[in-house]
Length: 219
Image 1 (cartoon, rainbow, N blue to C red):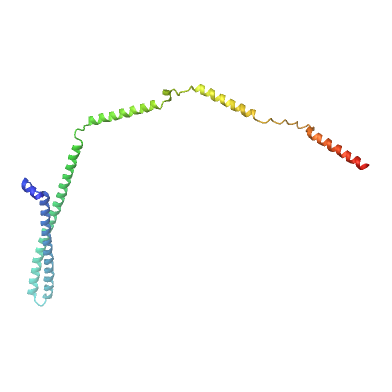
Image 2 (spheres, rainbow, N blue to C red):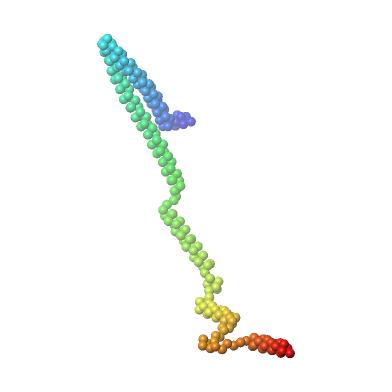
């Protein structure tokens, strides 16, 4: 879809261009790696051939060493090329990341503009002042509603203290009125002990009965 849009609008699809470039470069890197593997094997083969003919056939050994050096030179050139391609791939990928990051940041900035459209510092200050004013008004209303003086519930402190003292005195009088009398103790040096009258009467009856019993026995 993006390709068709770029065809009609005349604008290049940077995403597709970047992707195609990276794919092409990686394909080239794969080919170079295979070529390097091939040259490395050829170098090893020439070294073996040179060793095998170093004594018996110096001409063959010398030719093998020349081919080995040629392969090494080609391998070095391919290594440099591969390093260049890898650097280019990394640069393209990094640039693509930067581009997509900037595009995302631009969308974020546009979204912030939409959110802040028509919003200024003066409007924010006015809104905050209105909020604080309403909070203060709410606090004042709550204070008035909870004030007992508004509904006539305030009492004089002196009057309350006097009423409380009166209640305390009444309670104290009730406690004293219901208490048992305190027994009176005789002085420490006195030996006289009062005997209850009921106990004395009981003792007189017993003595009288004892005397009557003694008289009947004597008869």
